[in-house]
Image (cartoon, rainbow, N blue to C red; front, top):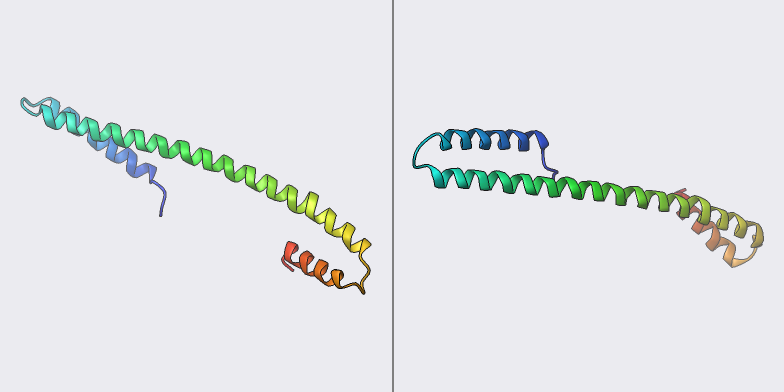
Amino acid sequence: MQGINKAKHVHLIDALLHMERLLSSEQGACACVQQTAQYRQELEDMHGNYERLLEELSGQIRAYEALFSQVKVQYLGKKLKALKKEIPVEKPAFKVLIKNIRLTYNT
């Protein structure tokens, strides 16, 4: 799925506006003018909703990245370091801890 191309949207809206002006200058084209205006309005509304959702998604991504960083660095990193100091190397839990450290830091 791709995003909506703003340039294509603007060009189509512009074409619809030109069509509205052209049709409204002719007699008997009333239904076509209304249909053209309706399409233009629907496209504008949908594009507005799209822009709003993108902004909302952008905020959600920023919030997730901030929490991800906080959990990985400030919580998990500190906790793993503390456990590494506490758990003796010969204990079976130490191997699990090392595995968890590698998983956390992708090493």
